[in-house]
Length: 166
Picture 1 (spheres, helix red, strand yellow):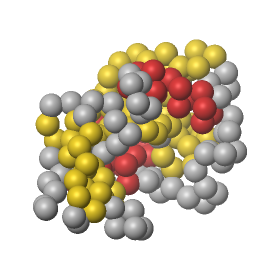
Picture 2 (picture 1 turned 90 degrees about the vertical axis):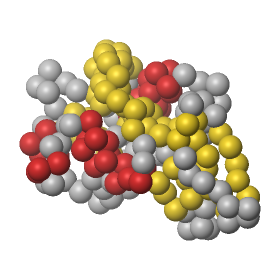
Picture 3 (picture 1 turned 180 degrees about the horizontal axis):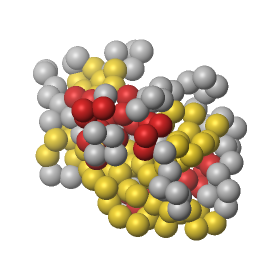
Picture 4 (picture 1 turned 45 degrees about the vertical axis):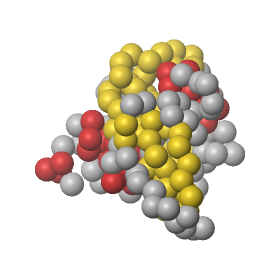
């Protein structure tokens, strides 16, 4: 059996192994959402999941039956201890840049839902479980940072970083 990695409807087909396919629809464990928290100085909050690792967006998997906007707020609270207000949908992105191959050979294609957000309560503090560092960056600083592949793709696809600057 051959599996295809295609977007359709509100979901996608995910390749899990060469001999089986699993179908996921709607808000699945393979959908991701991220918040772009901005401050008054138009800086964006990024996190590191490991010391000296690449910088990335706050975010993660959507729980079964969870709306993307609820998941974005939950992840901000879990990862850096802040409450956020989502102030707009920046975009929904997928494609080759959002494909991941795991060490066991499984491949998944993620669809990322990206929100602009502002912190309404709390000071960003890494949870020291998933996140070890959190810091604000200007858009000019982003092009010089070591970013994880999902974050770079998200910034390019959403226009936060112009493709001409990479």
